[in-house]
Image (cartoon, rainbow, N blue to C red; front, top):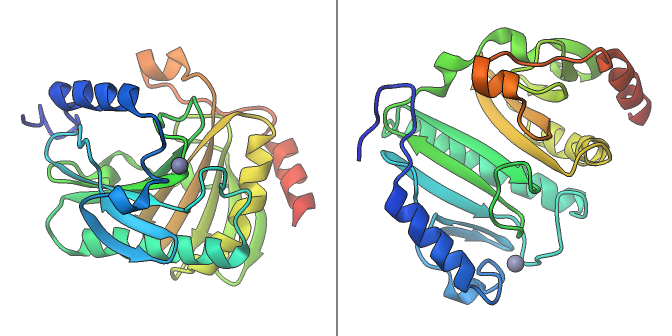
Amino acid sequence: MHVNDEKHLTFVYKTIKEKIAYRNSLETCPFCNREELEDIIEIDGPLILLKNKFPSLADTCQLVLVETENCSESILTYSNEHLRKLIKFGIDHWLEMEHSGDYKSVVFFKNHGPLSGGSMDHSHMQIVGMKNIDYKENIRDEIFEGIEIHKEGASLINISTKPNACSTEINIITRPRDDNYIADHLQILVNYIMKQSSSYNLFFYSWNNSIICKIVARWVTSPFIIGYSIPHDSNRIQKTAEDLRALF
Ligand SMILES: [Zn+2]
């Protein structure tokens, strides 16, 4: 179990096998059976932060943030109060881990839908501390630049003109950190994305004194990305920006 070099995250095959066997044996949703959850780090009302039962990435600390008590709830159905609480709780724990000094870097993200990389339907997010990888080494400023959709003080929302990978990437950029600005605009943006795509990811970045939430619409991953690391933009970005502006 070791990282091949500082660019690859190593899958632990044995743990993945155990995870698949466990998932196939499940009769009910484990995140609905809250009393039976183990390795809990913190509970705050409906929010639970716990260790991933099947940590399948070597040299990491993998945490799961269960967002709600109810299997049918999602970002689209939460109250504004709940969304604010969720975003603050998640960012607090993510940055606390980042500042602990135990990891080279820590990522905070969410998978939703069949094409997002998620394996559990019950709404949750993940925080992963990586011992040997600094995610910031792969990031460039340009993936957060784009056509502005909304602005309030120094916080803004834009749509990437040079996306990191996929054609539709929307950035909520707050500087200084403003969790409520993220929470208050997330639902409307996720709702827009979900009208085009079954799946999306949220990725959080601590970047140049900003806290950024990137919302990425997911389709089947492009062979240009997989084979050649060529990202996609789209000739529809201007139109998408106009659609989004009309929503605010
Ligand atoms: Zn559930």
